[in-house]
Length: 298
Image (cartoon, rainbow, N blue to C red; front, side):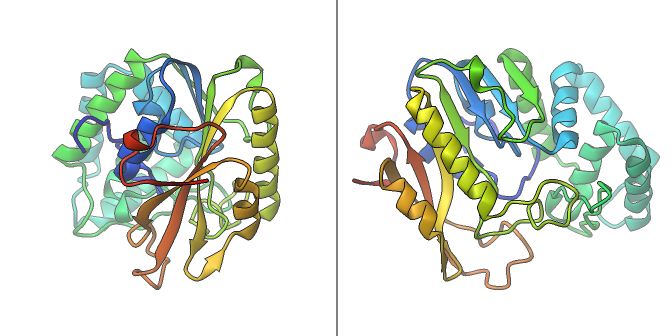
């Protein structure tokens, strides 16, 4: 997508394909911007703000971004190629992939994590309850290719060019005292209705349940009362289910529908044609012509 930086991480539920709907709906002249559930960081990396706070509870993901932020890009690419050569990684060498995976689960090297995602199934990140990376091999599908390399270079350059502060807090523990009225908090939490591999309660990280959903909405209400702006990505409906508490809560704010399906986000979905009603909820009004193909409801 022209004009936007694409994360080198193919994160489940990543927002790159709908950035043209989200980014124009942020206000101009943002002082501080918080990407509270950063994931692949597609949103945060593309925002223009004085300071960008990128937070995610997956500590290994943030460690990887710290590597990207601090390392010389050419040296980083050299290290990646050396690791690929050392383990003879290819689209068919499952033994080499498994050997690197075993090595990573001992060392937790951020570099090895990135190389693994390049060759993992659908380039995805998944851990078990012991925090061991356990995504299977992406046979005849995944590799470190020219597209990923190009995305990585642009991503690393932006991480160094912009003032981006990385953190690994639970969303309830983030220090919002750094914000002032008019600053923006963007939330793309695990969706209660979609149950991705990062929030099914079996991955060694905090599960996402109705309790977390409710706590996040309460947090957003408190930010609104403090004059902090927020934007929340979520879904009202998915695969015949509805999040009625979210829909009811949203009535006090501004809601926009986004035309998007999740047919390719997870191989766990059995119905790949299921329509998802994705929305962007804000506590401020945005200019409708700027947010193309979105319909604002009163």
